[in-house]
Amino acid sequence: MPTLHTSASTAPWALCDLDPGFSPREFRIQWASNPWMQAQARALRRQVFCTEQRLFAQDDTDDVDRGSASVQTLVALSCIAGEADELIGTVRIHEAAPGLWWGSRLAVAPGWRQHRGLGSQLIRLAVCSAHALGCESFLAHVQAQNIPLFQRLHWQLLDQQLLHGLPHGLMQADLAHYPACHTPYAGFVIAGERA
Image 1: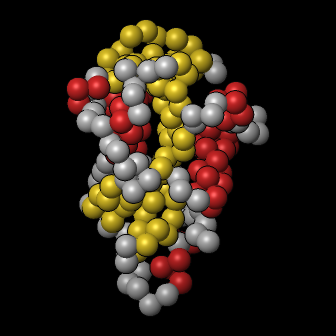
Image 2: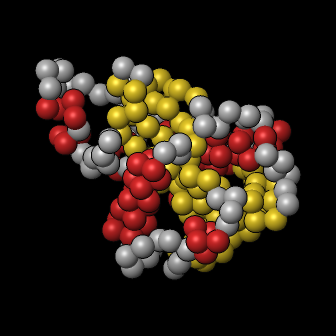
């Protein structure tokens, strides 16, 4: 079972005959499809929102995790030879009311935040898969420093609020820029270099 790595020095390819400068060039963005993906997504959320940002004491689990039948976890996975190796990003989506979907808990592992497109691609699959499931409005509370990214991705700022002691923007995706994705478990593969 793949494990959550916190640095390139603990990555599995650091312990084999690959070049020491090796870094994955292929990434899969998909819905979590087995228990290890769910567990590691939760671990990454705790790492980012509890340990790093200190938004929550020990666990960021909330009523969405406990009570929403429609909640889905999406993941970004680094791949070696086409196989998932390391979970490096996550976001969750859920339907709060018929046609009204929310995205939340977007997190990318610290060592991968400068990689082009991981967060953006998680957002893309989140909205596109909700769109395929009948989404008419997709909202998110976005930390203030991330509002420009969401605006570049065709989201509109509706309001500004203070949540968990930090400024957030209430934002809405422009569904015209997010065609329905009917295969979220398969998701899609992206390739690229670190920024």
